[in-house]
Image 1: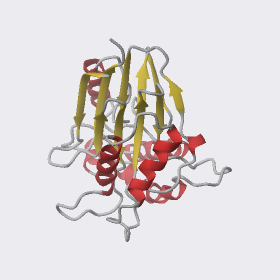
Image 2: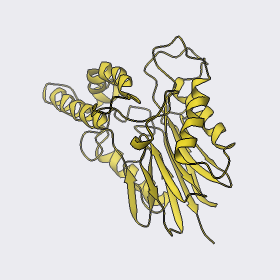
Image 3: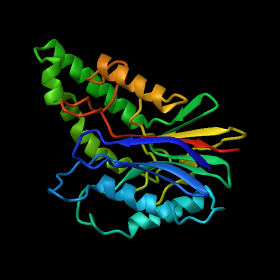
Image 4: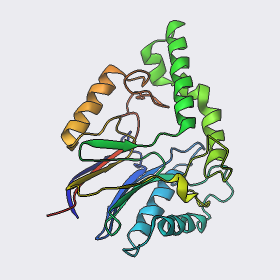
Length: 268
């Protein structure tokens, strides 16, 4: 594998980016640490950044021929063995999209996305879809009742409206109940149901793109992907129309979320 281009940027200058990426001889991955729902002390590493860092380090050590199930077990064990936030109410959690060169497969654990041969693959969580819809409705209500766009960019009342639900949805993470339609797989130290982790063959694709969900839409080049993001942020800074999301473009931030784009050449 050869890196054609890559880019990673946090949503706000001065704050650590909770996205990460790694490329080895056998694996490539983009890892997205979940946004913290607890107060972080100055200088303290956030749970999402910790999870991202531990998972990226573990991927660098993986033997080449592991199956999806074996990789999930390794990464879960790495997070389960860390006790930094053992007493906190929020587990260090991250999503990841992982390419196995040996298996020629892409594995989707959570929100990250991938693109090859002109098609983007992204598996949205049902609970996210519902909460984003609720946030967008709340923002429209506030706009219709005296709040300005600038007011909301200073204080996202829509996110505040769904914040308790965002915190509570961690109870759906890796829920083993097969009848729960809101359960979803993430890396958080708890066992992951392998059948809930999508696995797609890349086939004979020459190039592969891995990215976090900080990009509303992926294109075949970083330039085109960044251009689209800039256009969407200009049209929809509240993230309720072209780019419905669980948070807006906060005043002073570079985007609505951290973002990472990794484009690889798979064959010579």
